[in-house]
Image 1 (spheres, one colour):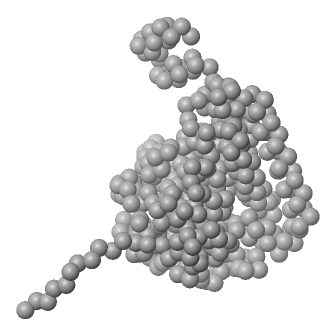
Image 2: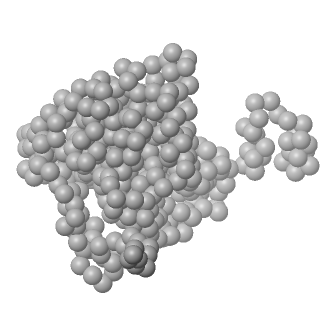
Image 3: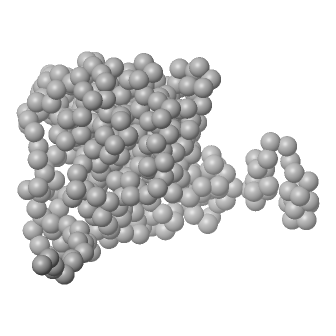
Length: 409
């Protein structure tokens, strides 16, 4: 006789909730430098242990350790530090601008600055990034004008996107930054398609796409991985695992079962799991994956293991679904502080220069905001209404021309 028991549906729940103590005891942090580094041209079967560990370079004293240590100059490290610091200063200032009613929406990158800055500097200028809304540091690392960012956020008359995008959904082709989409899951498909086109043309440019870990539960993710694998697309696919998809914890997307990097195994491509708060480790992983893509060895899936320290957006209150002190207890630290510590350990930096840079960046952001405010903030200045009829078709359609005539603009 077969004994049966009632079935039970498992509903993933985070370890900690508001009112409980933040608990990251489940996070396994291997020693910096302990993970092996195969050659970028290695066969997929020779990389299958990498999704189950965590690539780290910086130790607790800020020293670079192990085979993944990238060969970076002091100037490159300073560029990275500056981009991350500028991103945080800008985020704080524009978040306050939202609270003052100067814009309708804002999203901060706090704690995730390394995942945008390091790839931006590691990749070639003509490669293309298909970003999410938390990689503003990509643009900061490439010197995108702050005033343009402010004008776009304020949706004013000098908005470089002419009012066609929501605030923080930037677009900057000349900076390798493809138009942002609020539909985050679409990023991988766009990156794979763009990279396939590059390979089809015999070009030399590769693509990088970002999604959040929550988007791996969507069909777009699996469709993109299939195409990337089958056609060996020259693309780097980054899953930003910051533990929360708005208020849904990562377990809802499968984090309890295995790592997000492990999804690569089923598609026959390498998967890397990287300390996303370690600027050097992120750079090294991107550099490895880029070498693989440029060598016609195909795609790489990278899980950037990090933590979203701020709320999802200005519409979100994270204290309603996680402990208020959880961000402070994140075991992988702050990416800015860790890179600063590394530069100090190298003898290339000190507290005085760090404070001076912070003051300089604060003034740069203040100036850009003042310039944007002079043009106008939300509702006080708008792109010309005529813009809605322009840039729609390569050659104006007669119906658009008729609508323009009827509008009297």
